[in-house]
Image (cartoon, rainbow, N blue to C red; front, side):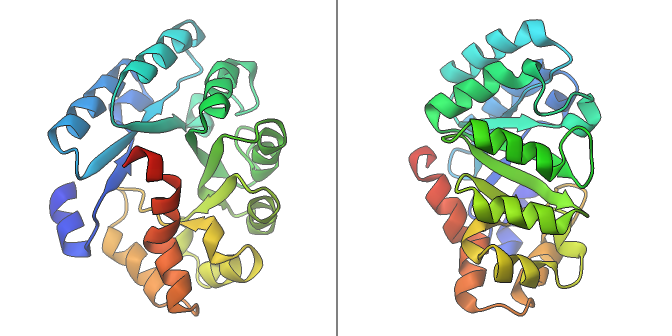
Length: 223
């Protein structure tokens, strides 16, 4: 289904985490099988679950030995530990030391992953690349400010593109070079998300930045 949708939308490469790994991080290895089978179409994020801190050092070791992964995925609102928790520190240090991507579910005014907490991480870890999944949904001004002020923080559009005018505002205040396209598959159809970018009141240069150029830049060493 992802390949069919991707072909229809002109998607050249998909980055995803394993949904099963969001519950049991041992399922991360399943994504390695997907990437191995379709190396020209998929890359993956390795889920870090803070509910099992005793597993995290081994998870990082497995990540370092696996192919096709570009960084880590945090789902703090569901795992119920803030992104600033010491339980995440081993993964954050490793990401910082190796300049990896960290895709985080972020939500406005959340005590687990609000844009204010993202800012705390950006102040501490300068080489890790923080992708704000959902762009801190609802707390837009703060999210935009954090992405604008910190070179290693990016707004990611999954679900956020549903808000009328939000892409225009992000481009105006943070710049299109700080925005990444995302779909939230399988919950939202990528055709709709692409349409939101195409029909925003932005330039074609902005559209190219959001839909592929920024990702190509961040993923250059992984492709």
